[in-house]
Image (cartoon, rainbow, N blue to C red; front, side, top):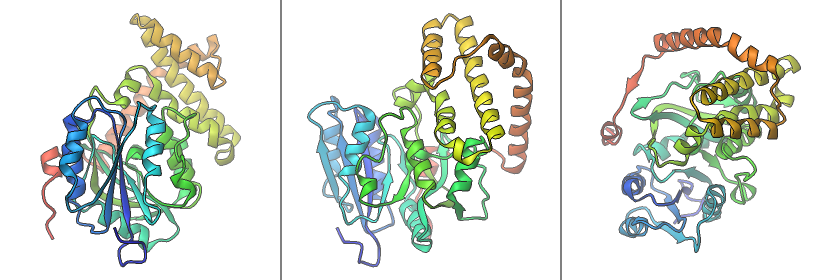
Length: 339
């Protein structure tokens, strides 16, 4: 591994994994296939009980060196991600998170580094994500490669950005960012919260190309969160943490009310379909965030449901007109890059 004084700064790709054997081999292979030369792959096995160790061992000795370790016992997800980042070599200038079931295009690191190196004020860089074979719309100006971080956070809190793949975060390292970057108190959404904190410190880079690929399947933690409604709280929690400083009082209240109505609509559906335990857990989560819905809140969530659906439909039609839906299979995504 070269140090950061070389022509190419060292980049650490960090992969925390738990029982990732069905997908891990291709994830490891996409790192080995990167066109960027000065690279190291950090892989932390969270006490897997499947063939994950064999998949890792099969890649050791490839072009990209691997730093690997196995936890003695199973850690909570946030702690495992923190432990994985802590294994980053201190000379690395950048870290790229790569979940164990996701992929990067062969020129991903090369293009992310190019934006960061050209803009020293950039703290993190993102790109277009392919999710379930769909190239996701993002809502960013495709002509720009650098955005003011505070502006991006405001747009996130206002619900104006469609899809930022926070789990694929690429960031400039500092000693502090390699020590517990993810807050265990913010779960789910610990990766999103880290991104928001990075953005409030500087600028964000962007590559308008599908460099990232997210696999979504029932065994992912994200799928489990989605099934129980936990992901509904990511935005409202962020508004509570950061909206007071970034939004006007009226905007802050409007966004909180809109998210509260969204969650209550799901609560009503769960109650009507017999999923009372999920509904109760979500009401408890709301209480923990300081929200105690009244009868008027439930009435508002019902009365605003039709206009909400209409606005959503109109927005989707407008988005498709500007950026038609594109599909990209995993095989297409992994095609060699033509030079």
